[in-house]
Image (cartoon, rainbow, N blue to C red; front, side, top):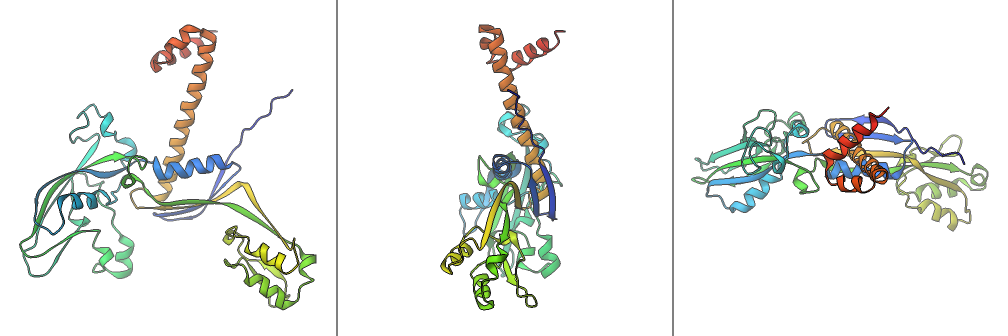
Length: 336
């Protein structure tokens, strides 16, 4: 029996690209790959977030724990995150201090000296690395000006005369699977690309009023009636949310089969929104790299099991040592 190849060559087509928004098509693959990319973008693409806070002085109305929690949720520019080490894996500081390999230090020192309430925001955080700073909403500055509330940074606390806040914070690398503050994604969603086919012969049996009534039953306005030809047309197939309202209406009118809607199981439309920690396009590229590394690990594990079968107890004994197995494979592959 001839072996069947399940090899696929997925393709990606970018529809819309902004720093914090990405919309693209993923074709010629299946749901497992699409959902794996979605989950990796949400939970496994690393970013930087404040993980340790040492408060020296706090006379504000918020307690120390509340302020530490708010600091941890401030998104930080994380272009360096992929090349940095996890604090638990860092041998330069043993994971319990700050170093250039696994952490970034922030300081904040603000005191209110006027009768006007002082807003302490993310702009008041001073970073030891100019490339790792709190995400800045420059779009709000362009639209509303620098005096707009959303353009002054993320609010941490408000101070009155005589109150102050002085602290030191350490940002570390992490992933959303460990804590939501490390997730670079505001939302990642995909839908099956729909194919909509109208039964023209059956549609012609409807009056103009019935056509309009049927079109209006779709909550997302997928269809419209051409005012000149009085034909029902599909104007936005991707707006269909698989709510089946249009199918129920056709059945209620005694016209089952008026329209056929098929979801393509090998074509997906992704919408990605970033928190600003990582640009949306870079988030997608990082997710692909992480998925490739996971597949390589699976392939290595599979090859290791094959080596165990060939070398018997010796291979089983060496499975626990990754380096030994790699050396075994190297020597095995080098045999002419």
